[in-house]
Image (cartoon, rainbow, N blue to C red):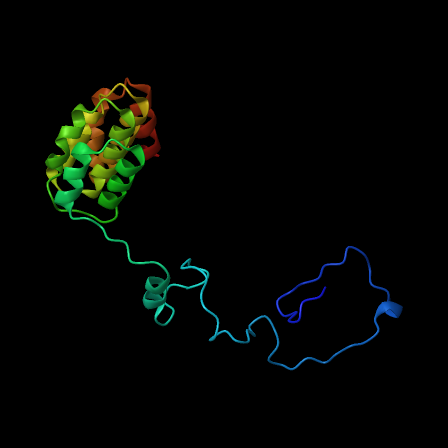
Length: 191
């Protein structure tokens, strides 16, 4: 190996090292070990992952922002407006992710136009997103999705109902227990 700085390298030998093969033993200073990292304050961080910049580290937010610009999350009204016109699947997924990032007190009825959507992938995202709304309309919208033709939409909406209010959802879902998907979700939450 021709590296000038051999710190950080581990050598694994797949055979036994004989005593006659050991030519020299060097006593290392006590500071050398698994915690020793020379030039740790001089190196630039390569990425903003939790390994390179650990959460809670001093100035971690500033270090992350130096590498990656902070994510600009659009306002709720702007997200709803963009969802009404967007056709790109990845962009729709991103917009729903923005909505799911934090609990919302807003009325989700602004998203009611999506209930008539033909794409089940959009309705799946809607069913996953509605439980983050702390509003009575969220329960009603999820309840309407429980009768959709897509099994995944029914599953996500039933799970969302149980996430919002378990007692009320179990009472509401009981008549729909003839549906295999709904029955499976109920059984998962009763146990």
